[in-house]
Length: 238
View 1 (cartoon, rainbow, N blue to C red):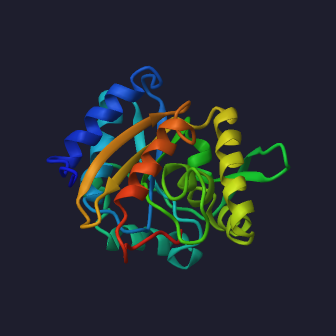
View 2 (cartoon, helix red, strand yellow; view 1 turned 180 degrees about the horizontal axis):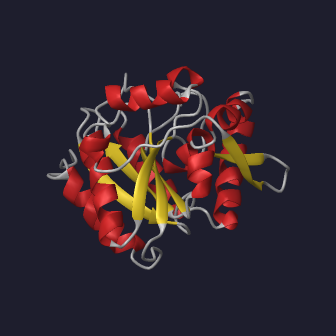
């Protein structure tokens, strides 16, 4: 059966963030919300709904470009990329803080460092927001989505380089090990994923807490996105 589009993406994101993260957010908690460079239908509604939900819970959200080395690998280039996609401070309802400076915040058991940009590292928590979909360069239980944004996008140039430089099997394994390391660091609030039909309609919006991102709930959403991906679908490279 053809999935039914989400009638109000902003309201759906707002409601699921409040429902899923109510037990994880404390008043005054600063949250770096990841804004990406890839194609998302209703990206403004999705991001602004997430931000409104966090505010309802008492958090103090701001937006960081979470796009690895895109935007010419400069802070101004990444800010302009967000703005070119409609993600202005006015549209999102939150400040955008851009920098390419990174901080190592964790390491995997295999010794891979995990990076966050300086603004994200200075926040109490991070929250990646991304479309969940198959990836062209590797296959795994989780491909493109909040987990990959947390490990690669938030890590700016060094985060992207160490993932994209390896083969598909190691790429899969590094992403899964990376999200576990970020979770263990205590910096991960969770994530928000959207799924689109082959025609490009948003058919699912789902928030994950820190124990769900990178685990079965996101894996199940990845399976659903894979089922819906039609031939010629614009799959992710980032």
